[in-house]
Image (tube, rainbow, N blue to C red; front, side, top):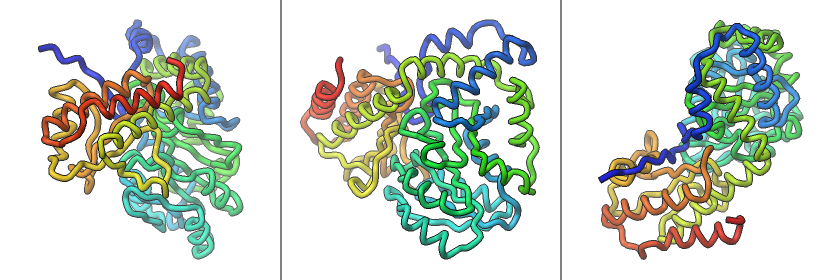
Length: 386
């Protein structure tokens, strides 16, 4: 029996056929006028996604490379940095900072919850001399979104810079870098940008770039000052992932053509339809709603009692052809995560929920068949023109 495959994870995400075809064309050299023009155009289009007038550089790396660059290019050994941490990727910021000798002040919250702006304000007051505040926006491991706008309002009143992991938020959720006062934002290619893993993006404000002048942490490949200078010449410091950068060019044009605000709206509608659907059959969200905002990149669902949670992603993928994500670390087997990120539309909602229902039935969970799909369809009919 043929099983059609659907990639519905929160990264890597599905790649449109147009982009795959573009990347399949004969390779061009990265030190040519043709490639220089692509680099120049991508730099301008990325500014529209981040909603910034500041430079946005592209590294050939995963998003973690940009996270590391956001520490090594702005801080010095012994500097104090506050890290908002309520998931695996907030913890990663803390781990990177510690690895480089930064004095990390971790503001932790239970998985499924967030850290409020008021707590950041208290931490800044209690720790004079803090150089930077780091926070995830959409915490992929828990499907919780943080109040980045509110935290930015707190941090911009100080001398500290505000650094945001927007890896699953950029191009998915509202992100107003300049208007909100975000100093550094990082993202990755395999999320809302609809292309394979391999590129990371970093945007830096004037306030942040000023701090680069005094940073003494080691850096070589991720030397942001050098990369900015290279970008000003429409080139890159090192050999880039040429094929993926060509794919990025088409992806950015697709996003801008749709309209960045419309892209954000589409992600919300798809994510909310999934949330409505899973709750319609008695499942519970992992995010502590309404006390926190759920992410529009991914929906984390608590595994119901009596169901072997680790089997859910395996059965959905191997039997029903839909690849989602399980829980990470301590959440393994306790939650499963349905993606709503990147090259997704209303059809993907129904496909995921149908495969989820089939899988839960296989694992003995009792509910009215088709109810999640029907609830999601009603939400979609009420909120978009099909």
